Image 1 (cartoon, rainbow, N blue to C red):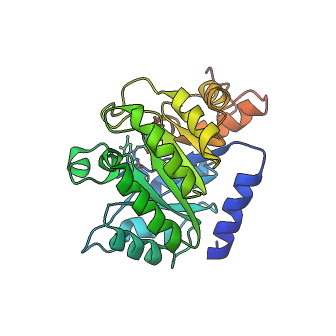
Image 2 (cartoon, protein in one colour):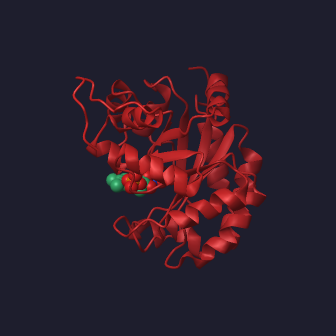
Image 3 (cartoon, rainbow, N blue to C red):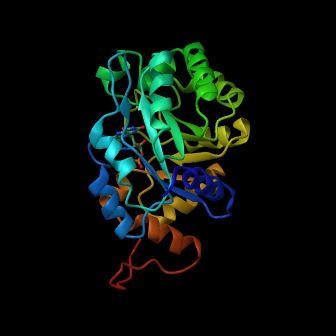
Length: 265
Ligand SMILES: Cc1cc2nc3c(=O)[nH]c(=O)nc-3n(C[C@H](O)[C@H](O)[C@H](O)COP(=O)(O)O)c2cc1C
């Protein structure tokens, strides 16, 4: 797909009535062969790359770049970056935009200690003013669409009250909210009520993320949060047909496996 078509198709997705279904970025999992597998089972509406690490000496990592240059999905791609140095994030965003992508995304959620101790990913959630500066610089330098993927806070979701006005101020094209703090990692309950607050208070389209493992759960999360769509990670590893089943379920059809065998949700 040509670079301009990427943005066009992404905008059209956000304008259509159907919920947008995004494949989550998952480091060392959602690579090019994984995208092919998901695509062959119906596929996502939009695909996030694994994150590009950004620092003074960073170069676009070739295996991740291949997902973009050889994108087999026919769908828009969002290139995710992780880092905290404004000049290097701006430089990398410019480099990424030379390639066929719809948007550049900033990771504000990675809970790996090696990342957050360097104040990147989820570590940045301890410094809202720094996030404000980074988003301001990226908003200015990204001509395509600019998106953010965040958690609720570092160890306390109270910071979400400070984050939401910052997200609104920078006029994000899409915000994904994983409804946990960094310290909650991947196992706690997901706080969907906070995702509903992001929908109500930011004015930008929001994707709800966390623990969607079935078509019925997808429907209930959409209803509870009012989100524009869903981002799904581990549910797709477990069941690569999940995107197709969600679409069928929301249309009122009985979700089926490709073989026609009925799925018991
Ligand atoms: C193995 C693995 C790798 C991940 N890598 C990334 C990543 O590169 N960037 C990111 O924003 N989130 C990453 N995540 C978080 C997921 O994108 C997602 O937010 C999280 O798994 C919750 O969604 P789920 O319950 O649908 O899996 C990763 C998660 C897992 C399990």
